[in-house]
Image (spheres, helix red, strand yellow):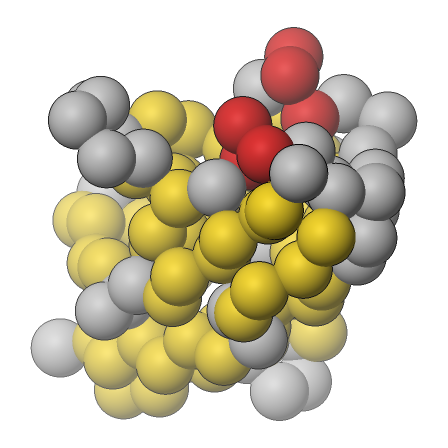
Length: 116
């Protein structure tokens, strides 16, 4: 089993910044990717960003490109999401995701609220 613990959500004004972090523990050998998804009220969960654990290659949804940056610390088994120039439409519960040998695991979610 894999456990994920997220931190860093909160309330921020439009144009502000937040940094989310996610620490993975347990059976993480063979991690393929770590990333972030989000779910706004009344909407489906959507992909935000992910990072290839071995290569460090990153991928983003178009709406956050140039504003969000995902990074990893392989020694600490953590992934972070630096979110700049936040917009009200970024308001959502953000979920950390890890894919280990083809299996997906999820964090409990952290609320990000951007006020206009």
